[in-house]
Amino acid sequence: MIETLLLPFQFPFMQQAFVIAVLVAAPMGLLSSFLVLKGWSLMGDAISHAVLPGVVLAYVVGLPLAVGAFVAGMVCALTVGFLKENSRVKEDTVMGVVFSGMFGLGIVMFSMIESELHLLHVLFGDMLGVTWADVAETGLIALVSVGFVGFLRRDLLLHAFDAQHARAIGLPVRFYHYGLLAVLSLVIVGALKAVGIIMAIAMLIAPGAIAFLLTRRFEAMLAVATSVAVGCAFFGVYLSFFIDSAPAPTIVVLMTLVFVLAFGWSQLSLHRTRKPPESGSSSSTMNSALPL
Image 1 (cartoon, rainbow, N blue to C red):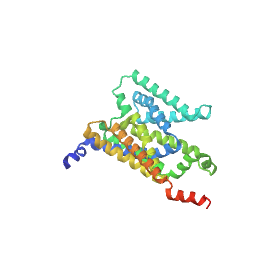
Image 2 (tube, helix red, strand yellow):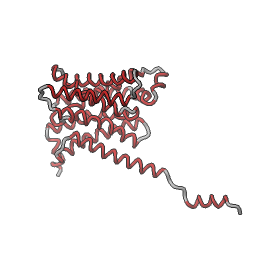
Image 3 (cartoon, rainbow, N blue to C red):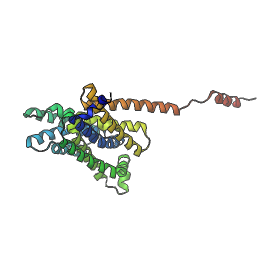
């Protein structure tokens, strides 16, 4: 029994999958809280889709795929910001136009070249096929991302809640805005080989949404979101070994189940706090109001 439970840890490809899953999940859990509070869930969706043409161009030129993906992600973020500031179109509409256009461009470019790179691996990742070099690259990205968010979390929180107040007290709002977008692009790049473009969206949104339902303080929200992301990533890889499924979709399914449980718990707690008035007290109140 014990040997069966420990079986996934005996294979090198599973060991690499466990490590890279945790390294991808930790910064995504931290960023997820800011995306949920700031209303940037669609921005994570936009950048994750927009990296595809950068990946294809990097492959054609011979550069690391991470470089092309990061540049494409930043181009998407800057384009959205420019169009928002110079048009009457709302930000969510601009993001929908930009990310769908860049994603379509990436598909067209991919279909025009002969490549050993499998499109499904780009879209959904190949966690069981990563190497220790990929793990090291993802670890470096995670270190930079967690360091940036952890060191500036209070300023970033103020920027997320009230950018005008942050600007009034002298904080570099534009730096935090584009810095957060740069870290978001970097995290998506780190997740590209492990969970792919599509699954990265769920891992960027679900942990923060779960933590938002369960907590009332931001520090607690960060801790819960990171714990949920790392826990679901680890157990998703572990469970996928026994049910013979792909790790990334299994992780997302686990996060969805945790979200449903968190929603149910929050609703139950809400009903508990709303206690109906006791019948005796209401009747005594009515009796005291009646004339003797």
